[in-house]
Amino acid sequence: MTVTSTTRTAGRSVTERLAALGELTRLAAARPDGFDPDLLSDAEQLLRRSGERMRMSASHTVVALAGGTGSGKSSLFNALSGANFSPVGVTRPTTRHCHACVWGMEGAAPLLDWLSVQRRHRYGRASALDEGETSLNGLLLLDLPDHDSVVSGSAAMVDRLVKLVDMLIWVLDPLKYADASVHQRYLLPLAGHAAVTTVVLNQADTLTPEETDDCAADLRRLLDAEGLLETQVLVTSATTGAGLDELRAVLAVSVAAQHAASDRIAADIDALLDRFAVYSGDPLPGVSLPASATVQPGSGSSESPEPGPPGLEWAEGGADGEPEDGTPARPPWEEEGAEDWAPWGTPAAAQAAPASRPPWEDALTPSVPPEDPVSNVPVGPAAVLAAAFEKAAGVSAVTETLHSARERMALRYVGWPLARIGERLRGRAGARKQQAETETPKAQRSDIDNAITAFADAVLIVEDGSALPEPWSHTVRAAARSRADDAAAALGTAVADGLPKRDKVTAWWRLIALAQWLLLLLVLAGIGWIALILAFGEFHAIHKPPSLLSDVSLIPWLAVMVIALLLLGSLTASWCQNMVVLAADREREQAVHAIRARIAAVTKELVLAPAGAELADYERFRTQLAGARA
Image 1: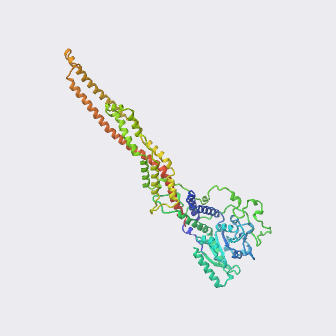
Image 2: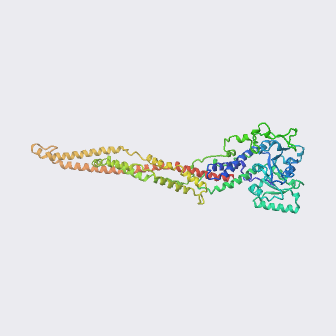
Image 3: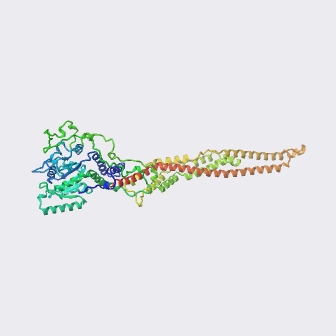
């Protein structure tokens, strides 16, 4: 049997894949309503136990013999160990406790503590009996309780240890090798763990060679139907020793390669990624992530993890489970500090310790926010949304009203004074009308909601034209609408801040007004002069010589002057009116640009940034899912 790791051959270490899985879990945990809670729980547990295993001894390979009552796995355990370490039942063969035999004891104690193997059930191969077994140095072999045992807690212990060990050897007997409980509960979920799973058909001595071949072929057929095509099937007999050399060779290859732990973690990762894949779809157009936000090949450590903190010390046991010095072995709960011992789990002290970090941080998961979330939103939908917000805020109507109001206000200064006097005589009603026209309208909430809905529909389309898968379709919509309540007030403020002061008076208006009043005074003076000549001209002609107030010949000249002044005033008012219109047009354009800039800022802050961040998380989810794959 050749043990290989698809993770290593693809250039990604287990640490890198765990980092990517940690980021997947972080992104999914932030959206608990959309992801399967069982998936999140399984991912967190895998990250936690993988981090714990990688901190344990890297020089040991944990192999578990699992099977049902009467399958002969304890006899097989003893045969491989070379001693009767695990008691074999006679009247009712059953294994109640987990037994461990270690080839090479250095550094194995913390690992055994993590597995919760009781001290009196730990045995070491470090004596003369081990001569010729150097190829197994680093093997930690477990004899698990029977998975179908009636003993309380046995099934739960098997379920827990099956997830912790590096390699599994399922021991089946000729009578129950097709047991549905074994295949459905244990073997079928291991379809992706072929590299770390071996199935042994034991007790071949109870069958004829023909029956053995038939059973082995039928077992092979069942495994192939369950997807375990690459799982090796061995035929053994603990009684006669048949097949034990082949089984030892399988163990020796795994121990020598020291890949079983990483291969097991890689297989567990693959199983979870298949469940995460249903939440991923095609890439979004235009969404890019900074390089630091993804896990790159080679970023993880390729060196062996250092051992974890030291655990309880353990002694080499003999056949009876006692240390070599003859001191009777005592189970942990009979020793000092028994109240801190959790028999079938992690020691109570470790269980009670508060977690300062979420479990996925054990995998050194990076969490880098996008540099600019708005850049992840397609330009087209963003522009349409800004235009819709502009329409909802009534920018066109406001700026047109501003244009008219500025014209009317300017004409009060630069227009012909007689016309301005008429304007003022109309009273305050006109002023109140102008004030009502220039008031900033409020954006309608229905228009805002419709604009955001249309925007969300547009950005949810991926490259193939389909919509984002759930829960991302829901979360993007929710993010885009998360600050919709603030949009109406923010748009009103943007319009008000973009408008110029309504009572602003330009300096040249005042100069023109002064000139117009001077022209009017000259016109009135000329008319008055003509009136005086007409009134006193005949009287002065009889009694006195002609003067400026009696010379009738001046009337034509004065009339010409009055007409010229009136014409000059009219032309000045017309020219200034044209100048005012041009200035009002420029002011309106400036106001439109200012308001649009402020509405664009409001659009980015309230809608584009939250939606862009969610789109970036979706693309990061896709990227990390691809990065976590082998």
